[in-house]
Picture 1: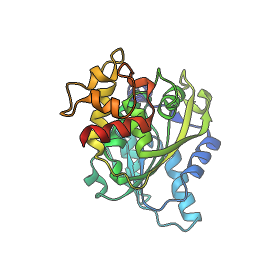
Picture 2: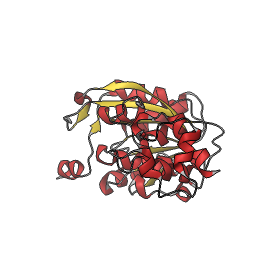
Picture 3: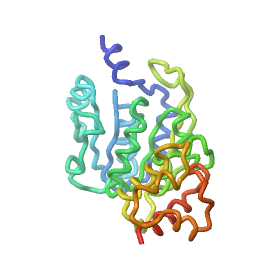
Picture 4: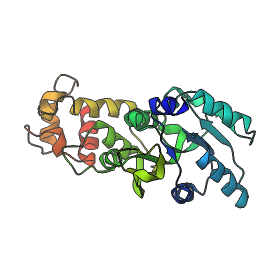
Length: 259
């Protein structure tokens, strides 16, 4: 019964101790409150606590577990950390007392895009993170050179964070064994973000609203300033599509469009 419930929630438990140790090693040193997403049976949790003790690091830990039974078991362990029994997507800054946080976790892959959006939405509070997703998804998030996978979300994430893949994980490292390979990536928030993040994200989404249309067509009805003139000022062909531009292009076009 428990296996069925876990499968329904998209949970594949990490059982490879060596991989777990490597993930925690990438996560340290810690300087802020730690939020672990989807701790499951507490494999990473135990290692985080143990490593913090060995390094004599004061640990402020909150774990977010959607599964009721798993959350109850974690609560009963009484290791001095706080357990939040809900989806990370429903966690608000007040749940972690509006503190700056560092996040870690092996997250349910079916909500990967939603979690990245959660990170973008709460970027002000997130210093850094180490997360594991499906390999193909991590590749899409980190690779901005492929026109076919370039989109508003991965551009926005890379605008806010410096990120890189650090560990490859085979299906056999989990139970139940998934049908896909996984990757761990780490990221850290960039300094001096000077433009309105929420509006810039809306702008990027408009740019990719219809991938078949030109950038001019996607944006022409959305800004007061004539986008045709903006493209001309930036020396871009009026027939260019969003997938042909790089992150700096989008930043410059956005800045020119709101002047």
